[in-house]
Image (tube, rainbow, N blue to C red; front, side, top):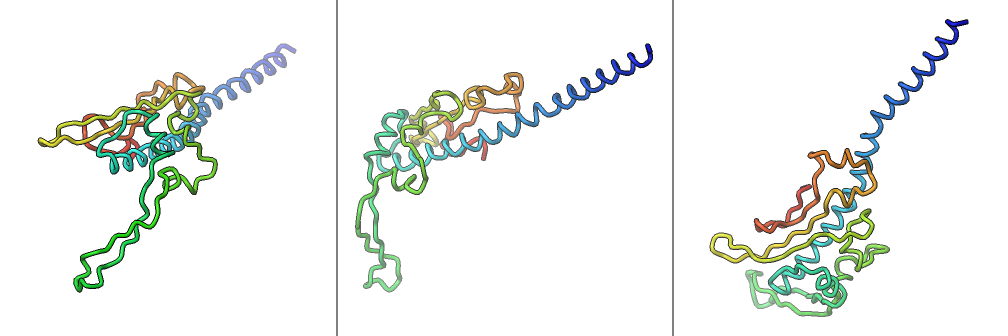
Length: 191
């Protein structure tokens, strides 16, 4: 009778330890899947911010550090639609004739084909509960030339909010950043 009780207790202990081992292995696997899913969405938002900043710079010769300015530019800013044809009098086909045929808003130009795109949400980090991207802009001296720069940052604690805090602290998991305030680059740290 004692042997039977010991066998049952050992069986229960084995099942419990097996389940505990399974969960120990699966927790980081599930975390990594969710981290990758969230990172993909946040990276797309950072790419959107970069695209708007590039157009803003093309029209204003500088980047903006303000989401209010960026959103107003998205809603009100217009880009010309230009018809370019070769000059018929030029036999080398190097001269062109440019004709502005229409104007389109920046938002329609960049995001017109995206369903359910909300311009006002471009400033918020997905999954963060309303935390804004950190954004800054300015100019740096590079080789004697003042170059406009900008940076937008999504902190890992914000876009991974609600996930295992111990796994978020892993130094291999980085904040997602596009641009730089020290180098004239528009690359993201995921590229």
